[in-house]
Length: 195
Image (tube, rainbow, N blue to C red):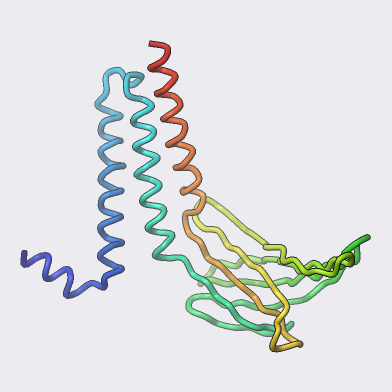
């Protein structure tokens, strides 16, 4: 009882949810790993273990992603540099290309997060027939984090472009865990049918 009061006193509501989510997902992943090594005949429960491992990874990745994701919206022109939270976004240059039925404007942005730098090139397309605009997102991904960058024309500031930047950790692990859950379920289904 006293420990519960201390936790609620010192931690924010979101922190408590994060701690609980990470604790239960880590418990599930750890118990699956212990089961994995303690099985004499791994083939008996292979599908179940893979699915549970995938589910634990999914919960862990979702909580980390929800807690650490960042979204930045700003109006910028070429040469501008803004610092928001831990990120520095620099609008380096703009390039245009003309295709048969549309014109495309590319923005070249450099995003710095502490000592890491990522260059992203989102674009806006203007189609001729009928006249319409579409935004093409620039995405850089790795095993740890995904960077998304999109641009739009500003309705209020004609000399600037609206930029939207998203920082999404562990997106790769969310997709991988869904594949693990599906693989485990399919494997177990076919195994039971063959028996």
